[in-house]
Length: 202
Length: 78
Image 1: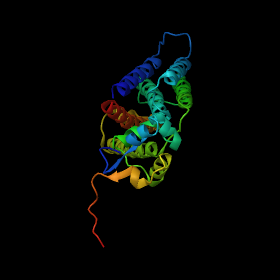
Image 2: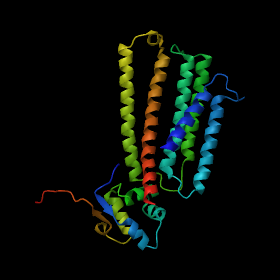
Image 3: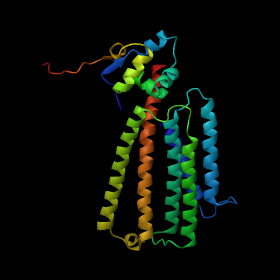
Image 4: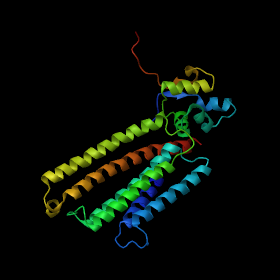
């Protein structure tokens, strides 16, 4: 679980940093983040190639997928926070957020490709783990949507009145990404339990 | 997915009887990941019939010789 937490926090921190308005690197934050993500994924791939007890392809995929989705999510949430509830689509800030976020999303997809390994891509147990993770993913999406619907229906306050349609759409996207994060964490939790069992057996 | 299953196996012993076959070699022989072999040997995963038959076939045994009940189910007899 420690490794999952480290990956989660490091990825969240990177996403937040990339969304800062005065990003201290002379490169588009999204592009810088994408290069960094792919470099880390490539380094991990090289390390896993040499390690005898390296995780197999399904666990690698889940780990890199978690990292990628958390970066995209934290970048999106921080950007939305900075833009504010009255966000409009065709403004410089929204365009910058869109370009950077889609660049990071592309890098997250490529990270999954870099996670491939020599062994089987998934076996029956991985599919069972993935099915359980998908169930939790659905529950989390339903819970978020339920809370959101209730807030829209019965919520009060200035923020709710200022919410633009663009912002509502972004929130729905965030809910979907959060449910993907839940999926990856559920998978990784199952694989972490395997590792504990293996350590206990030796 | 969690806890122990009522189905045990002799995989660890069979691996050692077959030239100390590694978990990875067995996993690759039947097309699964090493983690699944770990879970099977630890009694934390009950394989499908297809996988059970493949594993038994690797050691030239029957499924009954490879897998066994640790807690037989209480089924009503006909």
